[in-house]
Image (cartoon, rainbow, N blue to C red; front, side):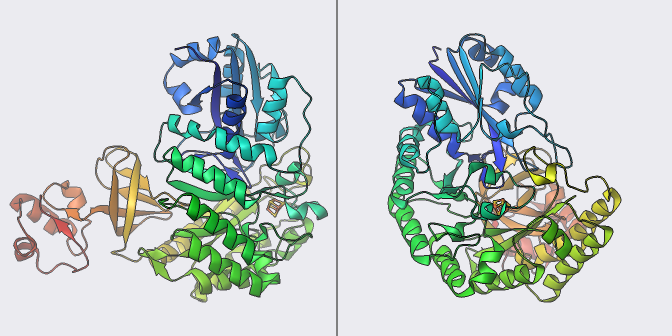
Length: 548
Ligand code: SF4
């Protein structure tokens, strides 16, 4: 194969952007557009493909031009792929002997392998260039041989996004890829320095992308078969095209334009969730925020999560790290999102809040963890719904205040106890409320196979579903909720294929259990429900079966 340019996806995860499969980041698509514009139609490979097939090393070695995008500036746990490690990056950099090579993306802020570890500056990568700044602009300047100036608008990115949309067809999970859409970069809170740990202020003051450019990109992606999108590359969707200041007043009209533009550009889309919402925006501008959330609920796809960067419930830690909202403000924001979004559509709540905690911040003491637990107990006692709680350890980056001012490793045991307490006392009962027994989740896609196979719906923070049986990878099926882990569900394919399920799985059918499972296995096949129930007794009417 003759390759003009090789684009390697080492995956990205930032406070305001996700590009780990099934997500594909906007950086990959706009860089593909840049290369296209320079008549360098690219071959796209993911880091997982390169790790899994040593023969691809030849392609890397011989490519005349290689661009690699990588960098996680928030810690995460991933099912769909493993972001490039520093070792991966160096190995690829040193392999690129055939031509020019560049490394770009958030990894240029530094590299940290996991939460709790300080990021280290990039050295000895082997790439001929390490390109800081917005990745597509940086690659364009590098290919042209210019210095490059960061622009304060999206004129170029809008064009490149359309030109590079074709690259999604080369993604190994295509068509099951979620296109992370960029609506803004930079954070409004950077006027006061931003949150102490965050890398988003490195992108400068906020720049909002116009709806026409986003809609044109969605139309192009749709023409290449994209069905799944997420409005994820921005720090606070409620601030979209809103006014100046640290916490801009939401503009529901701008959001309405955004959603209708996207819907018109891709009328057949299947997935359109959101990501970050600043709870402080909701608490400070409740009426406008309520209206804006209603626009989101009308335009998105259900099962959605408004991710709140709460970080802590300790006022002292909030003050010491310039965080965005007080515990009472976050609580009020949880109430408002529940009021607007907790109704069910397609069997799942339309829009629920998700909470992010960061541990190891400056000012943290042992009592911080008591306050965090008390806050969650208050949410539970109030009968509010929360889709998920993320608990992470600080991953400090050079240039952020948290790099030198933090409490990492001081409260290790209490941190671990906090996680266990939340998993046992909060997550478990909350999962039963959000996904009651017998809930049918539509279109779950298996990503990991084995005696228990794991899958998820396409969406923002989809719940992990474990099927107690061996399934083929990328099987798409509905899932009947039958049990609960701390952060996952046990489910059966729906309708339940009673004649073919393994015995262990039969025991998960609601109303069956282990003893009757053995009986069913001995007496099958059954040709209809009444035959089955003559053996088991009446089974819940809500459980559908198939007898093929
Ligand atoms: S609100 Fe804080 S965490 Fe969120 S993007 Fe801005 S600076 Fe980062």
